[in-house]
Length: 482
Image 1 (cartoon, helix red, strand yellow):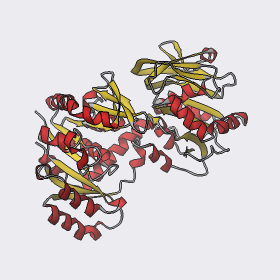
Image 2: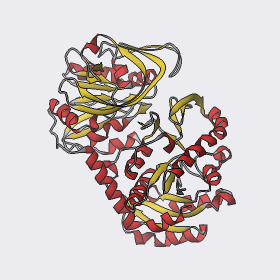
Image 3: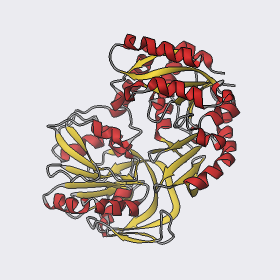
């Protein structure tokens, strides 16, 4: 039976996911079989698992760090927001319902059983299970039905280490404040803390570090400097993609849709030295000098079509196309490029039909059945292999399907316009395939570096583990697990 350790955060986006990935790689180097686990995640950036379900992309990266295939047990409850107040509820990799936030709060206690089942299965297959919390245990208003932080830690008897992010300020108050607001039994589960994202001379924080230890009676496990190669790893938040600008290079723009999903499709492009990846944010115009505009996936295709039009991006896209520019739509973006998107059963929202952008002569009808599969396809024009995954609802058909984007098991996949400058595909992760990515960029007259994307991610994970080993008490952290 495996030992387990839980990493929780003083807030969201404090670095929990990367630290779990780095610890997983460090434990793997020691010869342990280590598996990642997150009881509940909220993300539209999902990965398809070896057992045919979906989990948060961060857990798939942690599985890669651990040297194992991602499995639905690693993230038994996944929430995929469709609106500001509602989300799809995915349990053990499959959609079971769509619920509003208040409805989900009443449903959560019934999901603890599914969480504990998955955790038990992982413990049977591992030496270590590294658990990632969600948000912060300081959200005591959510504690009664919690399955993501202290609710899980108490039920599963897993010791907790808290992460504070010093980069955003207030880290002393965050950690000391958590000890103040959580109840004594929850506080007893916390065995220590660490400080993340430090910039500058860490000795300048010595007094603050000792103050946290004194006020909380928790042990400190180190101060981790900012990890400069974090941008080489798949982004958990689409906003991270906008930080990779390389002015002066060839511009590729992508639209920051309100329900953007599976934006890891763009990760390989941000690492290309010849590409300046431009995030077009709400209220901004699509730049006039881009070679390619990418419409990414969406958790609400018709909703994001309305959002796209509200920004004036439909007008910008038509102007970009008239100037000879190229457009690529992936999954929901592919559906938007067609003549219409119909949802007669109201699967993604209110039933109805929405006019598409009309750049592809295809139409889409939403269906209840969800496609979740890993695939290997061929780019129809160049025959380069594409290792990808599909995660979508809806069926798309029409005359432009006679010019497929790819061939999947010999059958046409996606569509290409008559002029060849507008493409749509359901293939997520297509740019991780090096030969296809290189040929695709060369067709746009964008210089390529012929780099191995997966090799670069592996190198960054090794560097992350080295970074953690150099600055944190890794042996002490692993020794906490029980």
